[in-house]
Each structure stands twice: as structure tokens, then as C-alpha cells.
Length: 405
Picture 1 (tube, one colour):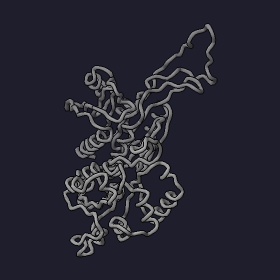
Picture 2 (cartoon, helix red, strand yellow; picture 1 turned 135 degrees about the vertical axis):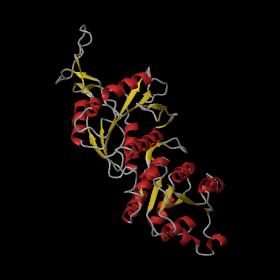
Picture 3 (cartoon, one colour; picture 1 turned 180 degrees about the vertical axis):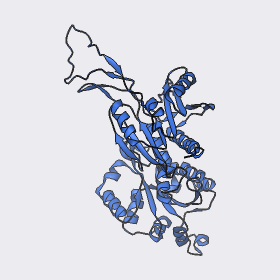
Picture 4 (cartoon, one colour; picture 1 turned 135 degrees about the horizontal axis):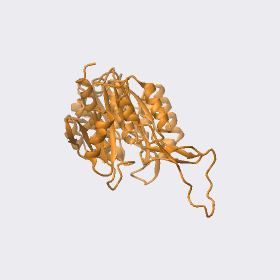
């Protein structure tokens, strides 16, 4: 309940991304927040006040000149009776109004009348986002103290174009809300947690390397979820194509040996979670020059040696964290292999996932894991990686709570 007793005023702008606000309301409320909503006229072309009211369990405000709502200067009350205002989707028009002091509807009037922090989640066509006018407006708003989350890159629903302009996902917006209204609260406050993420790249020559399909999505998402619960998170990331999570200190590495060194340098810690898919082997010696293909000679022979076992090294380290969590990506005998890993590596529990399924866990957006510990096996349903991270972060918080330190 990271947002317990927090009052969020959600201003829903007019764009196709408005449908995400239905999930956003649910996510905010399940964390303990009360959510009151304002809908612009354009927003009501995409979703209905009935749906928004049903999910928020509150009256939905739509009209600046609604007699019943305004009999006690309702727009001023809305502007002040909250802990944070979230504008999502924040359209180019809504940003322009606030940046230039316009107040010709309920949403823009409330934004001008408030003395509370405002968080905007922009959503618009990529060309609109990159237009000089929108850039000027964002710069103005940031100087005025407005916070932003997103937009993200991706395909646009309304045009099929791709670029920067997609509204951030609901959980990303929730994370930004938590950081603004409860930056120092949470069950992991005062805890230091190390997380590894992504693949490692083991060089063969200057242009080739041994790697795997890990995207880093699960590890980065878990690092962010732990930070939202108040932890000081140290993320050690292999080479990935996703941004560093906000609120997390990130160390970038390439190889397994670099990752091992980085993790050991971050000790002591309260917990260490090894999500990274570390390459098991590397070449015995890296060629200083590109290995050339020569006609008639066939493929070159590579002499392989074993990489350090980072999980086992920390699981049996003299400065072992109070809680050590490993991940096991398996293609067969999931639980059996995870149980063997649990005993060998000195971990407190193993998060086991089957990566053999079609659609691909590695690089994908969903996961189905089993938690294997001495207490038994807990099979979780298929979830998004963000939802998996939230449940794992809560489990880690609970396990640490029961450990006397």
C-alpha cells in the first residue's frame, strides 16, 4: 500500500491513450490511493465518465460551468484537495494551455489554480512531440516545476507511425507518482539491494562475442520495483537496449568477470538478486584481430573455459547478504533443476522460469515463474514482467522483514 491515504487528482486528456487511464486508476487504488477524475470533452470521445466513475468509485468532473459542482467554487476545491495532480494523457493542447496560462475549461483551470505538484504523462503523434512549439512548452513547464514521465517510443495506435510519443504504461506512471508523493516511505526503506540484469558479452575477437537472448526487462523492472518500496538499489547491468531505471544507481558491465567484480565491490548489502543471464563460458583467449574466414580451412576451433559463478560466489561469500535470490532459466525439468541450484549456490530461494515456450520469455514482456525454496514450490500464474517484479519485490520485502539484522 505504497500510496495509502494519498489523494490523486487524475486529469484525463483527449487521446487514444485515454483507455490506459482505466488501468491506471485501478493500479493507483490497489496501492491505497483515492482517485478523483476530471475528463476533458475530448477525453469523453474515447472513454466514458461512467467507466471512469465505476473504477474510481467517485464522481467524475467534466464541466467548468456545472452548477452543482461549482456552487462552492468546485474547481478551486479540486485543485487543492489532493496530494498530486496527474495529467494523462497530457496532449499537446493541454501542455500548451498550461505553458501559456490559458484556462478555458475545467482541466486547464484546475491546473492553473493548484498549489500541488503536477505530473504529466504526454501522449501524441511523434511529429507533434518533436515540434519546436511542443519542445518550448515542455521546457517552460519544467522550469515551472512540472514533472514528466515519458513519452515512450513505439508504434502509434492511430496512425501506424512509430517514434517517441506513446504514453507511458500505467505501472510506469504509478512509479513516478510514488516517487513524487512517497519518496522516502516503503517497507524496504534503509535497505541496500544489489540486482544484476541483462546478458553478458564474452568477446571472441574485436567484432564477435558469445551472448544470449536476455533483454534485461525483468531485471530492470525488478530494480525499479524494489526502489519504489524504498530500497537503495544498486543495479549491475550487462549490455541492454533499454534505459536505466529511474531512482536506481546503475553500473554498466560487459563480461561475467566484470559483473562479478562490480557485485563484490558493492558488498555489503541486505539482499542480492541475480536476474542476469550470465554466460557460462568464455573463450580461453580473445583474438586481438578479427578472425578471418579462409577458404578450405573450415570453422576455427574455440577453446572454452568456465566463467565465474557469481550467484554461488555471493551465496558463500564472507560478506554474504542476509538474503540471496537466484534466477534459473530452464528449458526442461524446471523445478528439479531449480532445487539443485538452490542447494548448490547457497541461495535462499530461486525464481525458476521456463524459457522453452513459444513467444519467448527472454526478450518478451511476460513471464511465468515458480518460487523454489526450502519451504517448497510456489507456482505463480503468467504475469507481465512488471507484475512479476512487483510480486517479487513484495516477497523480498517480506523475507527481509522476518530476518533479524
